Length: 122
Image 1 (cartoon, rainbow, N blue to C red):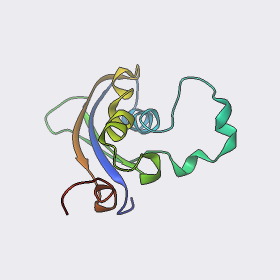
Image 2 (cartoon, rainbow, N blue to C red):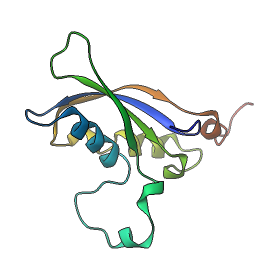
Image 3 (cartoon, rainbow, N blue to C red):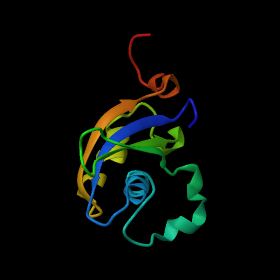
Image 4 (cartoon, rainbow, N blue to C red):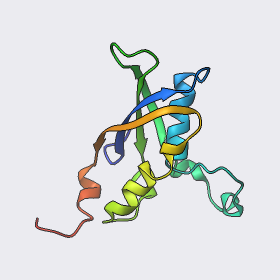
């Protein structure tokens, strides 16, 4: 991860037969650049720069088939100074994802580089 990434921790319960690594990768993709259809603009730019990445998965102690998936999102993915854009991107579409039985955002770390884009007191 980079010190400018937005970091999210999701509690993930995959559907039976879906490995935790696949579920974590699916959350990262679906909440950043993933889509259910082919988009003509995909060929215009490299999406690697904008992809969320699941960089760590760990089991939840005492919970069967539950994992914490840690996802890093590059700042280039988000509109500056927009909480709405940030949350819509991170949690807007991913909660209906079929590979998961359950999903909950447990923690979110916002770097100073992004916080500085908001208007408000210094």
